[in-house]
Amino acid sequence: ASTAVTYKRVMLKISGEALMGDQGYGLHPPTVQRIAREVQAVHRLGVEICMVIGGGNIFRGLQGSAQGMERTTADYMGMLATVMNALAMQAALESLGIFTRVISAIPMDQVCEPYIRRRAVRHLEKKRVCIFAAGTGNPYFTTDTAATLRANEMACQAIFKGTKVDGVYDKDPRKFDDAKRYETVSYDECLQKHLGVMDASAIALARDNDLPIIVFSLDEPGGFCGILRGEGTYTRVQ
Ligand code: UDP
Image (cartoon, rainbow, N blue to C red; front, side, top):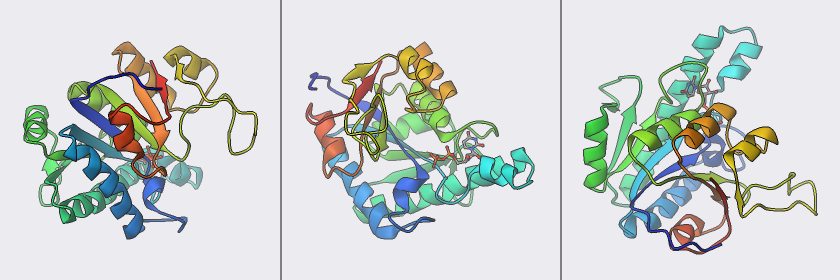
């Protein structure tokens, strides 16, 4: 799958779990560092990089509310978890010499910057990696939706969704040997068949703004950079 697209600005969305390694919870610093190096490779190409990191490795609103916590409170805790992950990624990127800003949808000035669209755009123009934290700032949303929202606001050409598998399959490739990977798939097919690319509101928001979603494996060393150079396997949702 090689379409020669020249990307100037992209959004990388990863889940919180991508940062926990094999621990089952929280942050695994060597794993954070490994992903930071994947980002570094793309940064070296001169591509402007936005990132959104989930919080599921620390706290998920739905889990909290299933245990009797009020949903909105639990969701705010989930959003705070994403700030911790963003700070960890910032530290890892800066240890590699990449200037990085954490930009939070919920202002916490001592910790990171508040979200101001024009300011974020300026950071990107100066080749600083912008990590958008605290989701959308609203309960009942997910970081997939936050990634789509910010990607639209920042005029990214695509969202790169880094996962454990190298694309979107018709069934779970880890369970079925005959699972088939889509080269491309439409937003509507993802929604209709519940293909699990992102949650429905995120896919709809991408669809309504013609924002392609590139699903690829984060476990493949150099994979992110490879795709930006027109190599590798992935699925393009369009
Ligand atoms: N969250 C929220 N609003 C947002 C983004 C996130 O309330 O705009 C909360 C929600 O509780 C969610 C948690 O933050 O469960 C962590 O985000 P998410 O589940 O998207 O993380 P991921 O699955 O990507 O690790």
